[in-house]
Image (tube, rainbow, N blue to C red):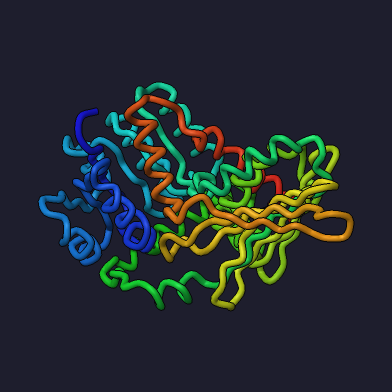
Length: 358
Protein backbone atom coordinates (compact mmCIF):
# COMPACT_ATOMS: atom_id res chain seq x y z
CA UNK A 1 0.00 0.00 0.00
CA UNK A 2 1.54 3.28 -1.13
CA UNK A 3 1.39 6.16 1.32
CA UNK A 4 -0.32 6.31 4.71
CA UNK A 5 -3.24 4.00 5.46
CA UNK A 6 -6.41 6.09 5.29
CA UNK A 7 -8.52 5.54 8.39
CA UNK A 8 -12.24 6.08 8.90
CA UNK A 9 -13.50 6.08 12.49
CA UNK A 10 -16.96 4.95 13.61
CA UNK A 11 -17.67 6.38 17.06
CA UNK A 12 -16.03 9.65 18.18
CA UNK A 13 -16.38 9.38 21.97
CA UNK A 14 -13.84 9.36 24.79
CA UNK A 15 -11.58 6.56 23.55
CA UNK A 16 -11.36 8.03 20.07
CA UNK A 17 -10.71 11.57 21.32
CA UNK A 18 -8.27 10.81 24.14
CA UNK A 19 -6.40 7.80 22.79
CA UNK A 20 -6.81 6.86 19.14
CA UNK A 21 -6.72 10.25 17.42
CA UNK A 22 -3.55 11.37 19.28
CA UNK A 23 -1.93 8.01 18.42
CA UNK A 24 -2.83 8.37 14.74
CA UNK A 25 -1.53 11.94 14.68
CA UNK A 26 1.72 10.75 16.28
CA UNK A 27 1.97 8.11 13.53
CA UNK A 28 1.07 10.53 10.71
CA UNK A 29 3.70 8.98 8.42
CA UNK A 30 1.77 5.70 8.63
CA UNK A 31 -1.87 6.83 8.90
CA UNK A 32 -4.18 9.61 7.77
CA UNK A 33 -7.65 10.20 9.22
CA UNK A 34 -9.99 10.72 6.25
CA UNK A 35 -13.49 10.03 7.61
CA UNK A 36 -15.43 10.19 10.87
CA UNK A 37 -18.88 8.93 11.88
CA UNK A 38 -20.96 9.58 14.98
CA UNK A 39 -24.64 9.80 15.90
CA UNK A 40 -24.03 13.15 17.63
CA UNK A 41 -23.83 15.99 15.08
CA UNK A 42 -22.09 18.29 17.58
CA UNK A 43 -19.42 15.73 18.54
CA UNK A 44 -18.87 14.84 14.90
CA UNK A 45 -18.37 18.47 13.89
CA UNK A 46 -16.12 19.28 16.86
CA UNK A 47 -13.89 16.21 16.54
CA UNK A 48 -13.64 16.64 12.78
CA UNK A 49 -12.81 20.36 12.84
CA UNK A 50 -8.99 19.99 13.15
CA UNK A 51 -8.78 17.57 10.19
CA UNK A 52 -8.76 19.35 6.87
CA UNK A 53 -10.86 17.64 4.23
CA UNK A 54 -12.15 14.90 6.54
CA UNK A 55 -15.48 13.38 5.46
CA UNK A 56 -18.20 13.43 8.13
CA UNK A 57 -20.99 10.84 8.23
CA UNK A 58 -23.98 10.19 10.46
CA UNK A 59 -24.34 6.64 9.08
CA UNK A 60 -21.55 4.04 9.28
CA UNK A 61 -22.76 2.46 6.03
CA UNK A 62 -21.71 5.60 4.17
CA UNK A 63 -18.30 5.65 5.85
CA UNK A 64 -17.39 2.06 5.03
CA UNK A 65 -18.22 2.69 1.36
CA UNK A 66 -16.15 5.88 1.21
CA UNK A 67 -13.37 5.36 -1.39
CA UNK A 68 -11.00 7.53 0.68
CA UNK A 69 -11.07 4.93 3.50
CA UNK A 70 -8.70 1.94 3.55
CA UNK A 71 -9.33 0.80 7.14
CA UNK A 72 -12.06 1.32 9.72
CA UNK A 73 -11.60 1.86 13.45
CA UNK A 74 -14.74 0.62 15.23
CA UNK A 75 -15.38 2.47 18.51
CA UNK A 76 -19.16 2.61 18.67
CA UNK A 77 -21.27 0.83 21.36
CA UNK A 78 -20.62 -2.90 21.79
CA UNK A 79 -24.04 -4.08 20.64
CA UNK A 80 -23.46 -2.48 17.22
CA UNK A 81 -19.90 -3.75 16.65
CA UNK A 82 -20.86 -6.73 14.52
CA UNK A 83 -23.00 -4.65 12.15
CA UNK A 84 -20.17 -2.21 11.45
CA UNK A 85 -17.44 -4.83 11.19
CA UNK A 86 -19.36 -7.04 8.75
CA UNK A 87 -20.26 -4.00 6.63
CA UNK A 88 -16.62 -2.84 6.59
CA UNK A 89 -15.36 -6.30 5.63
CA UNK A 90 -17.87 -6.57 2.79
CA UNK A 91 -16.74 -3.12 1.59
CA UNK A 92 -13.16 -4.43 1.45
CA UNK A 93 -11.85 -2.45 4.41
CA UNK A 94 -9.42 -3.63 7.05
CA UNK A 95 -10.68 -3.23 10.61
CA UNK A 96 -9.28 -2.34 14.02
CA UNK A 97 -12.05 -3.31 16.43
CA UNK A 98 -12.22 -2.03 19.98
CA UNK A 99 -13.00 -4.58 22.64
CA UNK A 100 -15.24 -6.35 23.41
CA UNK A 101 -15.71 -7.69 19.93
CA UNK A 102 -19.44 -8.22 20.55
CA UNK A 103 -22.01 -9.17 23.18
CA UNK A 104 -22.97 -12.61 21.86
CA UNK A 105 -21.07 -15.53 20.39
CA UNK A 106 -23.41 -15.49 17.40
CA UNK A 107 -22.24 -11.95 16.58
CA UNK A 108 -18.61 -13.02 16.97
CA UNK A 109 -19.17 -15.97 14.65
CA UNK A 110 -20.83 -13.76 12.04
CA UNK A 111 -17.76 -11.50 11.96
CA UNK A 112 -15.38 -14.46 11.83
CA UNK A 113 -17.33 -15.94 8.92
CA UNK A 114 -17.32 -12.63 7.03
CA UNK A 115 -13.57 -12.20 7.49
CA UNK A 116 -12.85 -15.77 6.38
CA UNK A 117 -14.57 -15.05 3.06
CA UNK A 118 -12.64 -11.83 2.43
CA UNK A 119 -9.15 -10.57 1.66
CA UNK A 120 -9.10 -8.08 4.54
CA UNK A 121 -7.78 -8.32 8.10
CA UNK A 122 -9.51 -7.64 11.43
CA UNK A 123 -7.35 -6.83 14.46
CA UNK A 124 -8.94 -6.65 17.91
CA UNK A 125 -7.90 -3.71 20.09
CA UNK A 126 -6.33 -5.50 23.05
CA UNK A 127 -3.64 -2.86 23.45
CA UNK A 128 -2.38 -4.36 26.74
CA UNK A 129 -1.00 -7.29 24.75
CA UNK A 130 1.07 -4.99 22.55
CA UNK A 131 2.87 -3.29 25.44
CA UNK A 132 6.60 -4.15 25.12
CA UNK A 133 6.86 -5.05 28.82
CA UNK A 134 4.02 -7.54 28.43
CA UNK A 135 5.63 -9.03 25.32
CA UNK A 136 8.80 -9.63 27.35
CA UNK A 137 6.76 -11.15 30.19
CA UNK A 138 5.17 -13.61 27.74
CA UNK A 139 8.61 -14.75 26.60
CA UNK A 140 9.73 -15.21 30.21
CA UNK A 141 6.58 -17.09 31.21
CA UNK A 142 6.93 -19.45 28.25
CA UNK A 143 10.27 -20.65 29.63
CA UNK A 144 8.77 -21.58 33.03
CA UNK A 145 5.29 -22.72 31.97
CA UNK A 146 5.77 -26.19 33.46
CA UNK A 147 7.04 -24.77 36.76
CA UNK A 148 4.14 -22.40 37.46
CA UNK A 149 2.48 -23.07 40.83
CA UNK A 150 0.10 -20.09 41.02
CA UNK A 151 -1.13 -17.16 38.91
CA UNK A 152 -3.17 -14.05 39.65
CA UNK A 153 -5.11 -11.59 37.51
CA UNK A 154 -6.18 -8.38 39.26
CA UNK A 155 -8.11 -5.48 37.70
CA UNK A 156 -9.75 -3.04 40.14
CA UNK A 157 -10.16 0.55 39.03
CA UNK A 158 -12.06 3.69 39.90
CA UNK A 159 -14.54 5.40 37.58
CA UNK A 160 -12.76 6.48 34.42
CA UNK A 161 -14.33 9.92 34.76
CA UNK A 162 -12.22 10.62 37.87
CA UNK A 163 -9.15 10.52 35.63
CA UNK A 164 -10.60 11.75 32.34
CA UNK A 165 -12.27 14.87 33.75
CA UNK A 166 -9.03 15.89 35.44
CA UNK A 167 -6.77 15.42 32.43
CA UNK A 168 -8.79 15.82 29.21
CA UNK A 169 -11.23 18.20 27.54
CA UNK A 170 -13.81 15.97 25.89
CA UNK A 171 -16.55 16.89 23.44
CA UNK A 172 -19.63 15.22 24.90
CA UNK A 173 -22.89 14.52 23.12
CA UNK A 174 -25.93 16.49 24.25
CA UNK A 175 -27.87 16.19 21.05
CA UNK A 176 -28.52 12.46 20.66
CA UNK A 177 -32.29 11.82 20.56
CA UNK A 178 -33.68 9.97 23.56
CA UNK A 179 -35.11 7.37 21.21
CA UNK A 180 -31.62 6.53 19.91
CA UNK A 181 -30.26 6.18 23.45
CA UNK A 182 -33.21 4.01 24.47
CA UNK A 183 -32.76 1.80 21.41
CA UNK A 184 -29.09 1.29 22.24
CA UNK A 185 -29.92 0.21 25.78
CA UNK A 186 -32.68 -2.08 24.57
CA UNK A 187 -30.40 -3.69 22.01
CA UNK A 188 -27.61 -4.25 24.55
CA UNK A 189 -30.04 -5.83 27.05
CA UNK A 190 -31.46 -8.03 24.30
CA UNK A 191 -27.98 -9.25 23.37
CA UNK A 192 -27.06 -9.90 27.02
CA UNK A 193 -30.19 -12.00 27.45
CA UNK A 194 -29.30 -13.96 24.34
CA UNK A 195 -25.82 -14.57 25.75
CA UNK A 196 -26.58 -15.54 29.37
CA UNK A 197 -30.36 -15.82 29.69
CA UNK A 198 -31.09 -12.64 31.67
CA UNK A 199 -31.21 -9.01 30.55
CA UNK A 200 -31.01 -7.25 33.91
CA UNK A 201 -29.91 -7.56 37.52
CA UNK A 202 -26.57 -8.35 39.08
CA UNK A 203 -25.55 -11.18 36.77
CA UNK A 204 -26.24 -9.13 33.65
CA UNK A 205 -24.18 -6.29 35.12
CA UNK A 206 -21.37 -8.73 35.91
CA UNK A 207 -21.42 -10.09 32.35
CA UNK A 208 -21.21 -6.57 30.95
CA UNK A 209 -18.23 -5.86 33.22
CA UNK A 210 -16.56 -9.07 32.04
CA UNK A 211 -16.95 -7.95 28.43
CA UNK A 212 -15.76 -4.40 29.03
CA UNK A 213 -13.08 -4.03 31.70
CA UNK A 214 -12.27 -7.72 32.16
CA UNK A 215 -11.88 -8.67 28.51
CA UNK A 216 -8.49 -6.92 28.64
CA UNK A 217 -7.44 -8.98 31.67
CA UNK A 218 -8.75 -12.28 30.31
CA UNK A 219 -7.05 -11.73 26.97
CA UNK A 220 -3.69 -10.90 28.56
CA UNK A 221 -4.04 -13.91 30.88
CA UNK A 222 -4.56 -16.24 27.93
CA UNK A 223 -1.48 -15.02 26.10
CA UNK A 224 0.64 -15.13 29.24
CA UNK A 225 -0.33 -18.59 30.52
CA UNK A 226 -2.71 -20.08 27.97
CA UNK A 227 -6.40 -20.92 27.89
CA UNK A 228 -7.64 -22.51 31.14
CA UNK A 229 -9.12 -25.97 31.18
CA UNK A 230 -12.26 -24.79 32.96
CA UNK A 231 -13.76 -22.22 35.32
CA UNK A 232 -13.61 -23.70 38.82
CA UNK A 233 -15.86 -21.06 40.36
CA UNK A 234 -17.05 -17.51 39.68
CA UNK A 235 -18.97 -15.10 41.87
CA UNK A 236 -20.25 -11.53 41.73
CA UNK A 237 -21.03 -9.14 44.55
CA UNK A 238 -22.10 -5.51 44.98
CA UNK A 239 -24.73 -5.75 42.22
CA UNK A 240 -22.23 -7.14 39.72
CA UNK A 241 -19.57 -4.48 40.28
CA UNK A 242 -17.06 -6.88 41.86
CA UNK A 243 -16.11 -10.26 40.44
CA UNK A 244 -13.92 -13.13 41.53
CA UNK A 245 -13.13 -16.45 39.91
CA UNK A 246 -10.63 -19.30 39.74
CA UNK A 247 -9.40 -21.00 36.58
CA UNK A 248 -8.08 -24.57 36.41
CA UNK A 249 -4.75 -24.90 34.59
CA UNK A 250 -4.12 -28.48 35.61
CA UNK A 251 -0.97 -28.20 37.72
CA UNK A 252 -1.85 -24.73 39.02
CA UNK A 253 -4.80 -22.40 39.65
CA UNK A 254 -5.17 -18.83 38.44
CA UNK A 255 -7.14 -16.47 40.68
CA UNK A 256 -9.07 -13.66 39.03
CA UNK A 257 -10.53 -10.52 40.61
CA UNK A 258 -12.03 -7.41 39.06
CA UNK A 259 -14.19 -4.50 40.06
CA UNK A 260 -14.96 -0.81 39.91
CA UNK A 261 -14.75 1.19 43.15
CA UNK A 262 -14.95 4.93 43.89
CA UNK A 263 -11.21 5.60 44.31
CA UNK A 264 -9.50 7.55 41.49
CA UNK A 265 -6.94 4.83 40.78
CA UNK A 266 -6.00 2.11 38.29
CA UNK A 267 -4.80 -1.15 39.85
CA UNK A 268 -4.29 -3.73 37.12
CA UNK A 269 -1.65 -6.44 37.11
CA UNK A 270 -0.91 -10.08 36.31
CA UNK A 271 1.41 -12.33 38.33
CA UNK A 272 2.94 -15.72 37.63
CA UNK A 273 4.58 -17.64 40.49
CA UNK A 274 7.20 -20.39 40.27
CA UNK A 275 9.18 -21.78 43.22
CA UNK A 276 12.12 -19.53 42.33
CA UNK A 277 10.67 -16.52 40.51
CA UNK A 278 7.68 -14.19 40.34
CA UNK A 279 6.90 -12.48 37.03
CA UNK A 280 4.55 -9.50 37.27
CA UNK A 281 3.14 -7.02 34.75
CA UNK A 282 1.58 -3.74 35.96
CA UNK A 283 -0.65 -1.56 33.80
CA UNK A 284 -1.61 2.08 34.33
CA UNK A 285 -4.64 3.97 33.05
CA UNK A 286 -4.79 4.23 29.25
CA UNK A 287 -6.49 7.63 29.55
CA UNK A 288 -3.18 9.34 30.33
CA UNK A 289 -0.91 8.68 27.39
CA UNK A 290 2.61 7.25 27.59
CA UNK A 291 2.36 5.82 31.10
CA UNK A 292 4.59 2.76 30.70
CA UNK A 293 3.55 -0.82 31.39
CA UNK A 294 6.07 -2.28 33.87
CA UNK A 295 7.61 -5.73 34.11
CA UNK A 296 8.86 -6.87 37.52
CA UNK A 297 10.90 -10.00 38.28
CA UNK A 298 11.35 -11.14 41.88
CA UNK A 299 13.77 -13.87 42.84
CA UNK A 300 16.29 -14.98 45.47
CA UNK A 301 19.43 -12.97 46.19
CA UNK A 302 22.15 -15.00 47.97
CA UNK A 303 20.83 -17.14 50.83
CA UNK A 304 18.67 -14.63 52.71
CA UNK A 305 17.84 -11.80 50.33
CA UNK A 306 15.39 -10.98 47.58
CA UNK A 307 16.17 -9.39 44.22
CA UNK A 308 13.52 -7.14 42.65
CA UNK A 309 14.02 -5.88 39.10
CA UNK A 310 11.44 -3.52 37.57
CA UNK A 311 11.77 -2.29 34.02
CA UNK A 312 9.94 -1.00 30.97
CA UNK A 313 11.50 -1.15 27.50
CA UNK A 314 9.83 2.07 26.31
CA UNK A 315 7.56 4.91 27.32
CA UNK A 316 5.81 4.60 24.00
CA UNK A 317 2.06 4.33 24.40
CA UNK A 318 0.56 0.83 24.13
CA UNK A 319 -1.99 2.12 21.64
CA UNK A 320 0.83 3.42 19.46
CA UNK A 321 2.39 -0.06 19.59
CA UNK A 322 -0.99 -1.53 18.67
CA UNK A 323 -1.38 0.81 15.67
CA UNK A 324 2.16 0.04 14.52
CA UNK A 325 1.27 -3.66 14.60
CA UNK A 326 -1.90 -2.91 12.64
CA UNK A 327 0.14 -1.11 9.98
CA UNK A 328 2.53 -4.08 9.67
CA UNK A 329 -0.35 -6.52 9.41
CA UNK A 330 -2.03 -4.51 6.66
CA UNK A 331 1.06 -3.73 4.61
CA UNK A 332 2.76 -7.11 5.05
CA UNK A 333 -0.51 -9.08 4.82
CA UNK A 334 0.07 -10.89 8.12
CA UNK A 335 -2.38 -12.07 10.76
CA UNK A 336 -2.52 -10.23 14.09
CA UNK A 337 -2.13 -12.11 17.34
CA UNK A 338 -5.40 -10.51 18.49
CA UNK A 339 -7.71 -12.01 15.89
CA UNK A 340 -11.47 -12.34 16.11
CA UNK A 341 -11.04 -16.07 16.75
CA UNK A 342 -8.61 -15.32 19.58
CA UNK A 343 -10.94 -12.76 21.17
CA UNK A 344 -13.87 -15.17 20.95
CA UNK A 345 -12.18 -17.18 23.70
CA UNK A 346 -12.71 -14.28 26.11
CA UNK A 347 -16.42 -14.31 25.34
CA UNK A 348 -16.50 -18.05 26.04
CA UNK A 349 -14.82 -17.46 29.41
CA UNK A 350 -17.23 -14.60 30.20
CA UNK A 351 -20.19 -16.83 29.35
CA UNK A 352 -18.88 -19.69 31.47
CA UNK A 353 -18.14 -17.36 34.39
CA UNK A 354 -21.64 -15.87 34.17
CA UNK A 355 -23.07 -19.40 34.22
CA UNK A 356 -21.17 -20.20 37.41
CA UNK A 357 -22.56 -17.00 38.96
CA UNK A 358 -26.08 -18.37 38.48
